[in-house]
Image (cartoon, rainbow, N blue to C red; front, side):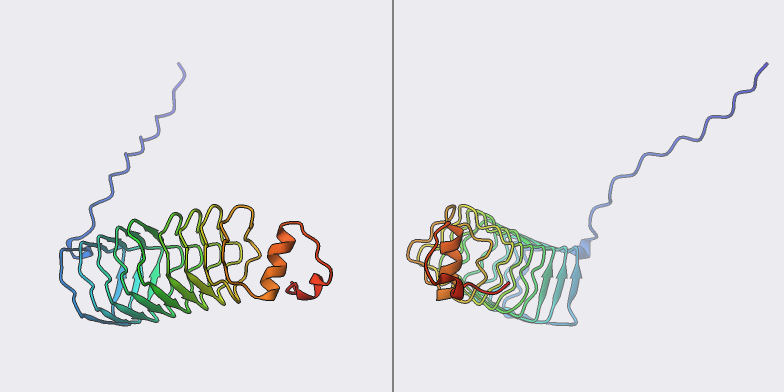
Length: 223
């Protein structure tokens, strides 16, 4: 009589992930005028319907956090980091970000009325469909940002690194693009009516349209 080897023990089912600890959920709190510093470091926190009006943020760090219904009205953020965060239906009225890091973060919902961004790294951000009309981005790194179908009418994107950014079907009517990298912009898929560009950018756009203009090679930026 042959002996069968014993059956290997069955692998127990993976238990469901536990809910976030209570101290990782901030709901309906009034943070009006609160001062945040580099001592504030939040990882995988969720902020729901929290009032951040006139918050002064100097270097606070938020990693993989979720912000839903948060009001950032008139808040000021300098040297802060919001890495791989999710923003849903947040209000950014008159909000200013200076030298902040938003790498890998995504935004959905409300318009960015009077938003001002100066410096910082917004690479790999998901701003598809965002209403950024009149927003200001100056000297910002936005490599591989997704701006598909974004509303950028009257926006300012000056001296900004848009290399490999996705701008398909976006609207840039009347936008100021001077000094920005437009190498990944296909003028045939974007509304560029009334945009303001410099001579080297004009050369890039004309070349992208397949038009040959005598003497334009001297205006093209060197690789």
